[in-house]
Length: 261
Length: 318
Image (cartoon, rainbow over all chains, first blue to last red; front, top):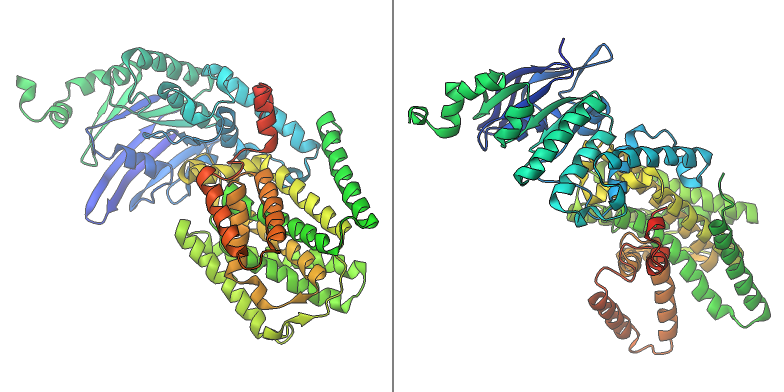
């Protein structure tokens, strides 16, 4: 079984079906893209995977250490616990906290000391906090944020905020990373740097990545497979070259007949 | 434990010094019993404000019912210490009161903490009213007439001990990973949950901790003022505590302490001007909020300011 398997996933909001009967899979180690015009249901799909929304019907299965875990119906924090981490399209950092705290908060689920140690600062507290800080430092190093770790997140430039979001997601130690438009609002230069980082962390952390992106240069360059959503339905899937030539995809993006022009 | 660092020793030293100085002044008689009431009120208000700040300032859940938890602690402590007239009885009373308040905090927290913002405020307000009405109608609490003749065991030593303990414990909690999880809820609940934090669990935990210390303060109160009636713990009491928290700065422990001391002193000072007392008090509050809209300390602690000034930014967080 692949790492993630989605079967006939549907989500309706009243009369509107935002995601309709979507089935897909992601193998371990793959880098898969999810594209589609605005309003196609990509972010809704992410929210379904991460437990923010409860699916109307369908199942989401994740393989973890040989076991198969059902994700649909789980709450977001439970989904994160089994190894799914995400970033947000509209950056959702803890703005008034430091860069270091943003990352340390994401490590909370792996903290083992309990409330007693929290109140009384036993040895356990100090030992674990030291480990936490060292791990956070290492992540920040990767994203070149070490020298800014005591800055408030809101004071970072836009591009670095995007990087911090990825660092924070990685801090939860995921096996599957969901990136929601990581390159949105970035210039070509920054996008190129981001492309490199995504490729690098994938190897370094042994990650499987699913990413939503509008920047086709990024998608076509790094994604091994691509799913295309339109009006909540899966209209195509395949390798970048196939997608580029796929008639329905071109229609969805550019309207009919334009492909002939 | 890495308790014996230079910084901690200095803090411990100043805590002991404060205690000794006040104790000496009380013994010599420079501080008379009138001053003692002010000091006691300040200590109790510090515990109340710091514990409410944990819920409202750090976790971002607006609670208007803190006086409810205070009253639970007060009545439980009073009822126990009236039957066991000894210091042990008093201590058992204070701790039982705090535990009962924490328990009620959990019971109330589970349904109400699903609500957000204004709705939660109204729910907590209602809960405090229910608690008040229960005390008003119970036989054992003597209804509206109130409880009289509660033995007085609260003195400067116990007040100071409990205040310092409450502040240290709450401060330690905030500085831990669990505390950071709570702060994350305030910052962005959806993001916090996506980072693996069980937001409901932490809201209830924090509510219980806050209720515990609110109950503790109530116990100290009942044993100091030896008279209780349900009206003491009405809506206005909750607002009084909230005023201290907002004035000191949401999310600042030292801010709450400073504001509690400041308001305590102002109230005492204004007692000599009975006619204009409330007007001056209100004007002062308005002025402070105009010039420091985020409270005296904002979300900073007092040691942040010093480190900032000396340029040791690196150490700010540790």
